[in-house]
Image (tube, rainbow, N blue to C red; front, side, top):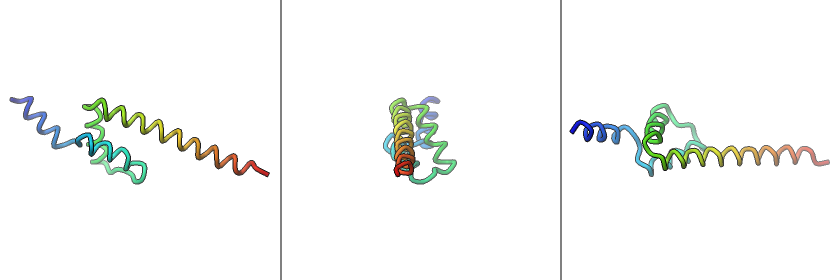
Length: 79
């Protein structure tokens, strides 16, 4: 009984998978507020699939940023 109550409370305080992935994607366009970051963190700690999505998204974002930076520096090096 207590476990069901705790699960219900946690579900109210965190995102579902669809909301979590949307927030992860949105975080590239605008910063998440503290409550959103906390809800997303809590969901990721309970959901290995969303944690994997987050890690993959973070890695992809770094790769894109690195590529953009390399393109900018290459443009400036051209005669």
